[in-house]
Amino acid sequence: MNKKYLNLLAVFALVCFFTLSLVFPLLKNTMKICALGVYALVSFLYIKEKKKEGENIEKDVLFSACVVLLFGYLFFIG
Image (cartoon, rainbow, N blue to C red; front, side, top):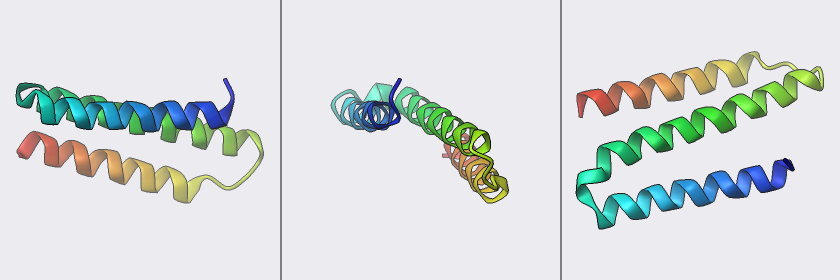
């Protein structure tokens, strides 16, 4: 799949999750998990592509891991 369309699909999914969480408050926790999963997937694919091109991925991996762990931690506390 083209990178441009993958990014557009991810943004569309995140907007849908946000909208569904506003319309259906009972789905708020499920939508948070789905949004975190979409972010993790897009981040993984971005890092995989950078690695394939031979670029340094250390900072990207650390940033993505921190974001996923932080939001996952905040989700389970809040």
